[in-house]
Length: 124
Length: 184
Figure 1 (cartoon, rainbow over the protein chains, first blue to last red):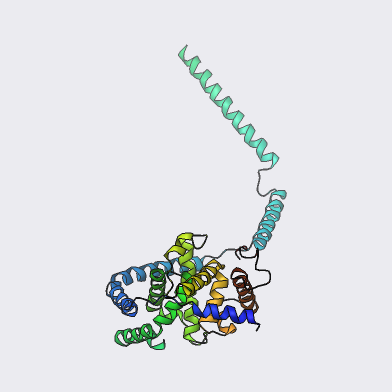
Figure 2: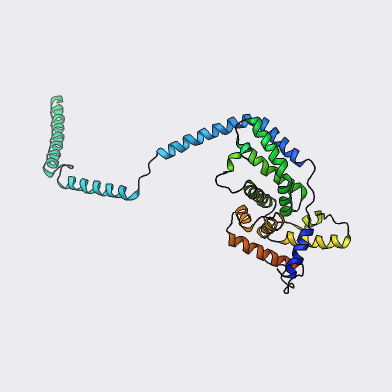
């Protein structure tokens, strides 16, 4: 330590803090007592808040967030399966059944037309 | 401190009272050296003690070396918070005017007033490091624990703080032009 360091130490030693108020310790102790007396009600509020927080934490923990990679794999498998299923024709009506449906509907129209003609003739 | 953690209210309160009476002056002195205002230093110390009254479980005896080292950290953090609340730019010129030194000799008064101003002008963390090591007599390791920093960081703060003080007080070769550096 050189002389300048020693001089600095001397100067720093000479700086003393202003004394604290005489009753500072008592003030702190009585503040603790005062707060303690009024803290029962706030304790209930804090406990309730803690309970609701723990319920929320429980719900959050019970929720399972799936990882993206397995989800993508599952979707891919589901897509392949549905594609294969449709390719084999199980999912959609084939051409023959579509034609039958069209024929049935045209026959129904013709029936209605014939009924109408019969009605008109009976009125004559 | 272990007594404050007891469930029995009477014992707990008695232990807290003992703790406060034993340590108030020491922690007030630190707070004063960080804030340089009597009223604010008293408020900060009260706030710190009430914190352990409410949450005695904050102190982990198995983790902390000493209660006082740990409580220095509480007081230092309370001072940081206080300064942050007060202003994001630290002390103002009004703080200088409110300061009072207790030296009867006018020459001494002027001299130590200059030293106080130099201390106030220090960046906050350098001031804390000097207060803990120089005034409170903590070892570098304890001061680093109290400031929650690594030992080399504390040593660097101390060195830069002392250099800055020497420059400001005209004790260094390069005293000229070094008094107004940037805050860390």
